[in-house]
Image (cartoon, rainbow, N blue to C red; front, side):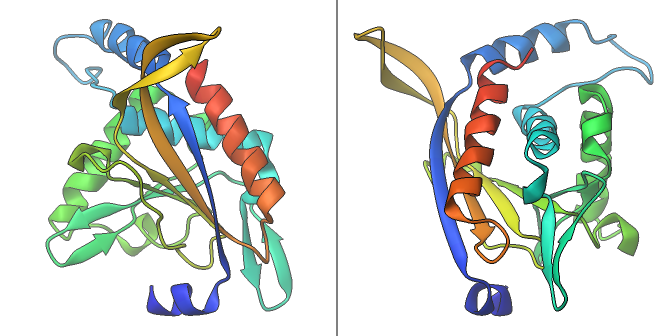
Length: 210
């Protein structure tokens, strides 16, 4: 991380994202889960963010890239690394081909990976690689933060807590659940305009999740 912060030209783009529609969809989906058995699931906001990020990377694929000595490398697969806190630091297990998986599958895989990460039981291929990272500190009530890029990836999305905030809609004051997301990008690969375009598309998907 020291090398990443000191050698990668970090550039940051932040955007507020309303998540009330996402929360309603989340509740509806979880209500349909079987009560027991292997098909039971409990989808979280983090699972939804993983899926939304994967869908956004398909729509804006030039962010799914890495900087190499020979130039920029574009990834074919959408492999999402997700930061998980462990007793002696941080590790990033990977949801492979996240764009091709349903939310229940993502939820089960993430729960399994995070559990084994905390127990130190991940296989190297389960946390090495990936093309894009997510760091979610919403559960700690964090309002906003910027994450350090996980090399050789070119971008990491920092997700803060969903909070009730006053918003203006149709020139009237209303209340919405809003989370601030900050995209950190390697400016050699993703310039400011491209980073903003990615975050705008992410916002569109999250705010119209169905």
